[in-house]
Length: 173
Image (tube, rainbow, N blue to C red; front, side):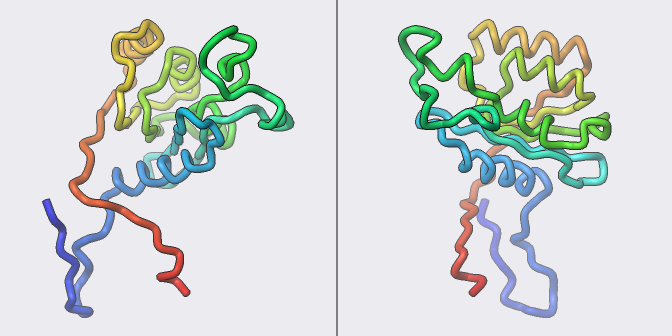
């Protein structure tokens, strides 16, 4: 599908972003802040009025130097990133007004793990919109789906738009 921009400056544009494209773009843009060399994840929490109430990306806790902790994935668990990294979903919730997330939806580029699912459910988020379900057969993600179903959290795999969205800073000079 190709969306053609109107050249007529007296009618509204037709190539504007849908809400889902907009909020997923914010999540993806947030993921670009991650310093993880392997996996960059971003999350955006939106309330019922289409207002962003939290954003986050995967990284180490505040005050923990990302030059002193390991970024690797293999080998000894203590020498990997896993005991140290805060996931994007957790950071988005912690970077929000936690008392106002009931019935919100979360946009995230990678399907949440079981630990993030617990936090999402506890926060009151009712819909998770994601792009990639990279590990569908891993127990962490099977249990996340199970908890989401039990808690009534809707899981929606977003259809990728058939277009490219770019940010050109020089356009605004």
